[in-house]
Length: 274
Image 1: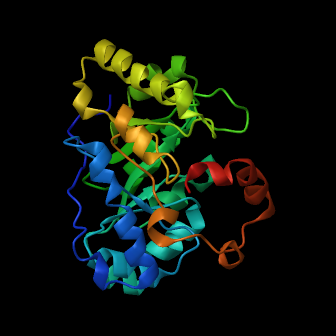
Image 2: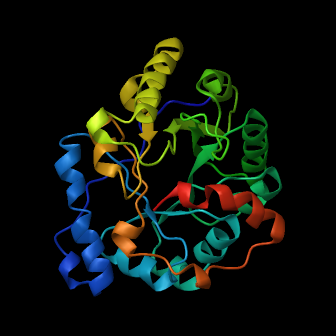
Image 3: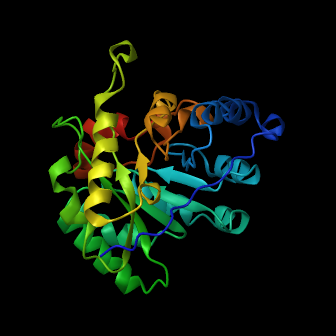
C-alpha cells in the first residue's frame, strides 16, 4: 500500500520578482494572487514550463521557485538533464503532468530530480511505474497522484471516480499523495462552484474515510492559470500554472514528437495546463 505521509508544500518568495526579466517578473507578480485565495491553506505550485527555454527555469529557480512541471516525457528528460539546470538548480523538483504511456515509463523514471507523477490513470500504469522505480533503486518512494476524469469527457484521461481506491493500494515503491483532475472548461461561476472540482473534493472525503487517511495528507490538484483562484477557494492544494508565470508559449519551438505520441496528445494538449 502507498505510504501516507504529509505532502510537499512551501511558502513563496514573491518580493524579489521585480528584479527579474519583464516577462517572468510579471508572471510572478500575477502569482501573488495565489495567497489571496489560499489564505492559510498549504499549497504546491509547480510552474509548468513546457515550450520555454531552460534559462527561464534557472532564473525562476534563483527567485525561490523549486517545483516545475512538464507535459511531455522527452522534453522533460532533455530539460532535466540539461547540464546548466543540473548545476544551477540542485534542489529542483520536477512534476510530470502529461498523459503517460506505458512504453515511456522507463524513460520518465530516468529523469533527474523527478519528484512527482501527477497522472496515474490506470492500475496497469501504476504497476509499470512501481516496477520501474524499484529497478532504479531509489531510496525514496516516488510521489504519485491518481488522475480522475471528473467530467466524464472522452477527450480527457483519468479513472472514473469509482475506480480510485483500488488503484491507491499495493504499490510499495510509490507514495500516494493526492488526486488530480482537469475538469471541463468554460464553467460559469455564476451558476455555482465547478462541479468537477466538487467531485474531487467529495472523492477525497470518501477515500480518506475508507482508508483512514487524514484529509490534510491528500493533495488536490485541480487548477490551471485560467481557474486557479476558484479551485483554491474550493479546496485545491496544488495548482498547475504556466502561462501566468512564464507568458504564452511558442509551440513552434517545441521538440518534435513521433507521430503516435503527437496524435494521442493532441486532444488533451490544451487540457494539461495553461
